[in-house]
Length: 375
Image (cartoon, rainbow, N blue to C red; front, side):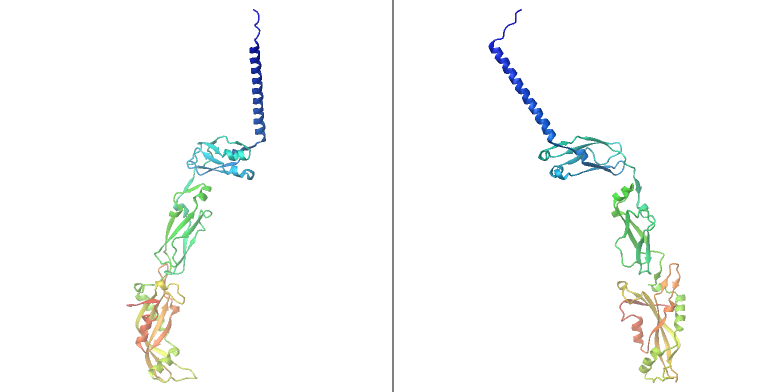
């Protein structure tokens, strides 16, 4: 069959199609070339290389967090980068987590960056099972030591035998200046849970509630109650007091002059002596609580009143009332009593009973509360 010859119109149309195809091909080539050249000129940034993924916590309580390094050359862009997790809390070994990266495309374009931000798959592993630590564990080996004598004790924490000294400190809650026997010292264990976790421990109680009570017991204490003064104690005090009635020269001149008697001298010295002392009464004085620590005070004293005769070498004599005191009497932790007999001294002598009463009742010295003893 003979081949039909194309008409002029058909040949024109064919030429037109070929030209269009050629232009389209050239356009496509230019587009590809543009894209290739444009990609070549861009700086590639793989966000996974700038992100640091951190896994913390314990098995079943793991946490994921991320920080992103900032390349100063592209600071504005990196400030827009964020990291997200499909799950970031309560993680257990074996959990699968998807990590995605977000960024501002306009910022990337500003720096002509080619950003690689492919999602990543992360498998949780390496979380350990924690060792629980109770309040009892945290206070194991912790002691409270007391210095002084009750009720003037000061408290100090001894944590030298504690097992968690590297991450736990201890403080006294509402610390008092002084403590008495029977008081309670509250001590708090101060810690950061994260510090314990670094050692694979987890506290079963919050630091704010981790408080242990320490009782003040087994200490020496000052006598503060008249009921604590026994007949046997008074007998010892009276015996020691009587041994002090010898030289009366410190008081003789004043008492003799008050009595209208003329002092005599032997070898230019007075010769006043005490004789025939007889017990009258006694008083227990205790320092008031608001005066604790006041300079120049003592905690307690027992004042014993005697009537005695003061005489001199020529036989002249008169009666006077004498006060002997013993101070800071202590009951030891073993129950024995230290009467401080070596502290005994005559502190006053006077012919006037009113002066002696004012002294033993502490009517002048308001730092003390004085009570008459019935023994």
